[in-house]
Amino acid sequence: MTNSKAKAVYLHALTPLHVGTGQAVANLDLPIAREKATGFPMIPASAFKGVLRDYFGNQDWVSTAFGSVEQAGALAFTDLHLLCLPVRSYFGTFAYVTCPLVLHRYNHAVKAFGAGKELPDAPEVSDEGTSLRIILPSENALEHNGQVYLEDLDLEVDKRQNAEQVAKQMADVFYKSKPDLFVKRFAIVSDSTFSFLAETATEVVARVRLQDETKTVAKGALWYEEMLPAESLLYGFITVADHFRQDTNPLEKLPNNEFTFQIGGDATVGRGVCRVVIV
Image 1 (spheres, rainbow, N blue to C red):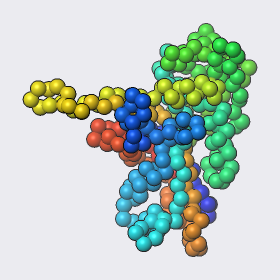
Image 2: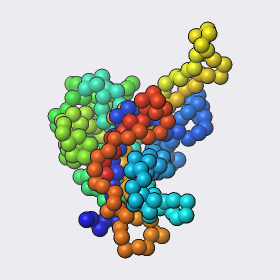
Image 3: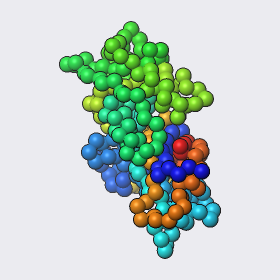
Image 4: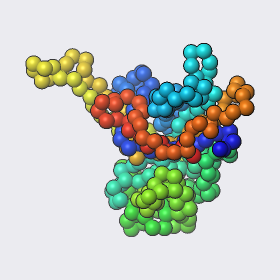
């Protein structure tokens, strides 16, 4: 049995994922939740905690770990933060894109919580003038004549450094069985480029409800919904709450394992199916 004070959580979206804010923004009726300071997509702790509790059902340890009407739960959950955003690529179909800021924040969190495994130091990416830079593993599926084309951006490959070691370590968590599928599509862009992609490269779909008689859109039944794309990768942590003073460690009941369950809205149309790894 482990006596750790925290466990790391890694989430891999298998289908588009909508965890919303409950309010409209600009031309989006149902935007996704985002961090206030960075604008990066995230999953609030409350959404993930509730789904995980439901997954474990009525086992005898669940009320102590997750809480009940009489008592607060022994486990504390962080929000799930974005680690890699899947972005459409002209070559290689799509890329798993991240940036130095995201990787530095991840390493700082790993150190603070004492859970998960730190990534090798992320290479810095500096855009030069109007030339946007990108760092790739030495063998990749994205590059063509020294260029990478993500969405509407043309990026120049920085040959002075590569992302091989970072990609391989991340693949060991998310793609153990087929690491090359991840490594060959992994990319590090500048913080500013990533911020632009996090704002513009999410999935937006129109949802409608038709009238049975006319098969036209019912009044007020057209709305636009934002989602994190399938293949998005996020991370978070589960710790023992400060108020829990008993000798037993509730984290010992939470298995180090891989789970598949649904998070967020639109469950009946296949949204939010995720693979979750707890280590």
